Length: 166
Ligand code: AMP
Image 1 (cartoon, rainbow, N blue to C red):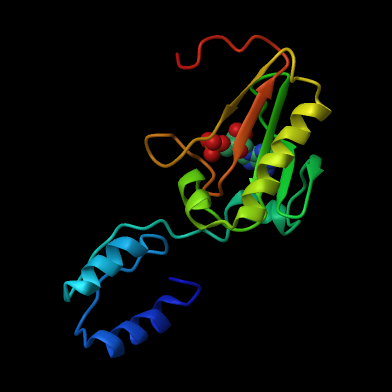
Image 2: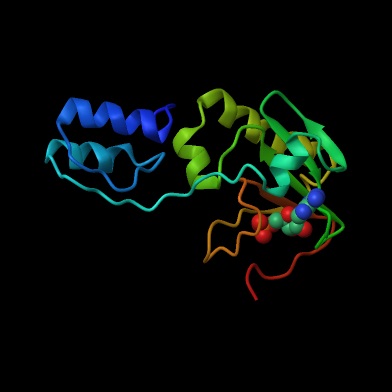
């Protein structure tokens, strides 16, 4: 939380607010925590998504497994999807650990966000799909059927992709 470990944060909060017990601390719901602290709530429980350091894209970023690089910049990497659903199927991921789009937008700095979308545009230019069109998808969480818990967008193109959801 706020760049500290959960334990450090808990100790700080205990000291500052004389709190007896705190249950679960989330990494990115500062507002809820602040509200709870203002009301001197003894225990707060907020669901959180902890970044899984062993996910497959984390391994790609650490060069532990092979991948087909398309492009990269300071903060983002683009590579071919291993199981393409269209003639062009490229994934773009941030290099820093974010679980999903919401987590990325909440926590990434403007430089990272700019670099990420610049890389998306550079992939679109490189694959020359700006005129014929393309689809960008990001899956998030359970209802989004997200398989890999590191934020990514799918860039799909190279054919007519049909209706959005079947
Ligand atoms: P999602 O369901 O949005 O999380 O999509 C995860 C995507 O990652 C799927 O399209 C997979 O085919 C793709 N994928 C999984 N492992 C790899 C890998 N090692 N290299 C490239 N793409 C992968």
